[in-house]
Amino acid sequence: MQLELITGVMLDFDGAPVCFSWRDRPYTVCSKPVRWYSRKLWWHEAESAAKGVGSALVETEMWRLWAVSDTNRVFFELTHKLPEDHWEIVKGD
Image (cartoon, rainbow, N blue to C red; front, side):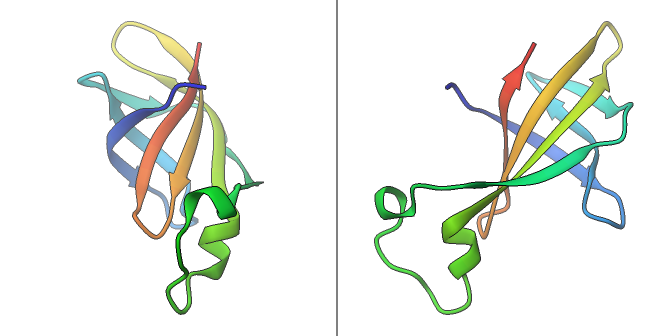
């Protein structure tokens, strides 16, 4: 599984992505994003837990959505890593 960083993520009031940049191209979300949480292998990823970030060690926020750029429409799976607030593409077909 290859991950690519995305930037400029803007969210709606519910925390769902509405637009972002990937490979220097802006994308606008054109479907209702679906959110779920995936379990992490926290014992491989975390050396120690800071107070108050326990759920971020165990779960990763995931989103599935369609987005459009000026030239195409693409289905994305995004991951939102907390507490770092990093967004990455897990899959883009």
